[in-house]
Length: 186
Image (cartoon, rainbow, N blue to C red; front, side, top):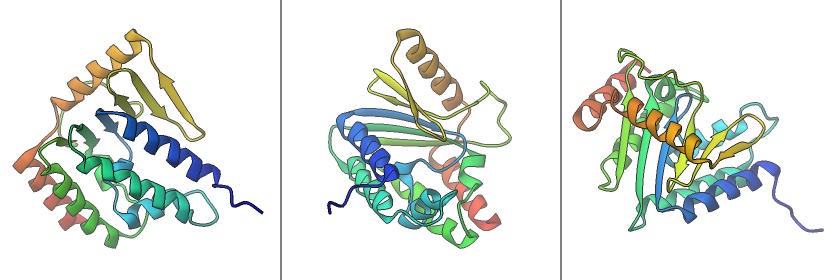
């Protein structure tokens, strides 16, 4: 009997393939650490929430997909809310490594990570997260699947929202200070 991938592993493989096919990604995440930035423990727990058992195959695919972060010729912009950084899929003990991972990836020259502090005024109301791929598609993940938006108007709206939100985020030294503060409070 053939070992078929789980539905969750298939979804992770599709997301990984889209990331590999893209040269530029802009990710807005209001609720959780984006998959490309997750530590193995965070990913395993995040993929287990709402399920009876961990899906190690899906977690392994998610971790392997992160290799794109280190490939030449790619650019990434990640924008998270402070709530996304503080929300955790498990015990507080997993957060120091996760916050350190964010700081390490933020130091890569072709990656920009920003966090919108709770104290920042809302530029737009972030009703959902989305990922822009090469300016040709915006994918909105839902609980049951993904919505792929490709019309010029939808892409322009998502790009404008991303830029407006990015203007309220902290980066660099301010980002490290915020991550340190969150780590102390976790």
